[in-house]
Image 1 (cartoon, one colour):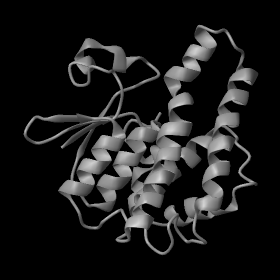
Image 2 (cartoon, rainbow, N blue to C red):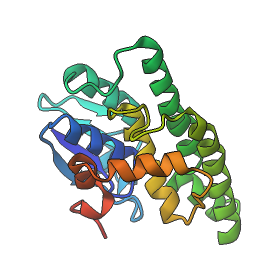
Image 3 (cartoon, rainbow, N blue to C red):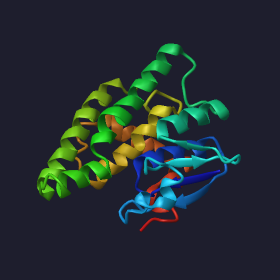
Length: 209
């Protein structure tokens, strides 16, 4: 499989983690978002939306949107499962994933921040106020929903960890105050002890620069 991504894209980061957890072999094809490579015709031929990640399967089929890719991975490679066996716990796991994927990430990704600055002409301070406000809103919702650890849903890694960890990485990169979120940070630190998460980290990607 070929994974088209960018080392600091949190959506691509999620997919790398899941691929590693499920021990699926894949090759990375870097797409530099800062340099605009995602807008090139060559990449639009891969994903017409011009977004990463995109996962090209061995039969030539290309999957897009990280949530869809992650669900496909869970169905195609069911072990180890990234969802609890209990239906209620599975729904709670999906709720945590959706807070990240639907409420935090879409309004704080690179193209939104670029639009705020380049089109709406807000300055750097205002941009960071925007970013940190929405991260804090989302993390405030997530914090009381987490278990007492070590991971988001308790003793076992779940899809919630796959979503939360990249979002925390980005928050720390933008100097988000994480003091109000001790459970989130405990989950983040516990995940960082696992090889699958370490190998997926942005600093360890071939295009990290």
